[in-house]
Image (tube, rainbow, N blue to C red; front, side):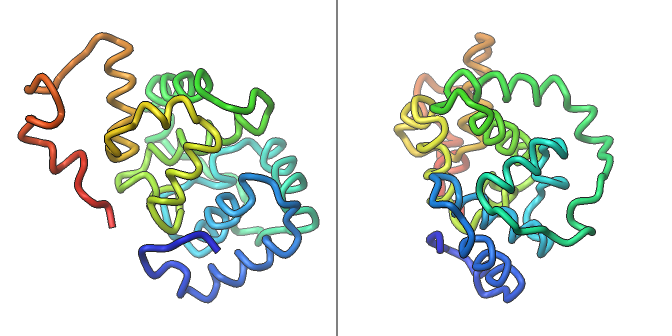
Length: 196
């Protein structure tokens, strides 16, 4: 199982679903990450929308590619609407463009992972928690495996959601920091403090 800095893995539903998916997984790079997110989502942990934000077709293709034969509870895969997500469409589009520009895999897998991270960014907690991951290390692995060039830019280990939004601001030429560098900023602890 992925490393964990909290007690998500002690949730029996989460561990059962995770193990069920990993037993049929095909050994691909995102199997553990996706299994932990899906298992957490089923248990109501995290802030991910239905199908991790993917459309039904992409979700079903992803499931067959990573966890063939696994079907999740109907209550999990039903459609849902979210007005807040619709109001933040421009923000989602900008985040998606940023991630797609840095994806390792140009296939639909890279698109799925970008979409999943975008929807995780819409939550109100740390990104790893909103995604339903079990630790920040899991998120760092997700970013390294799927968006390596972007992940390498986070060489000061800034919190991932703050880092992504800082990248968007920098691309627009918006610099709201009051200090010339992060190390001397009075908000340093807010951006770089432990997330656990």
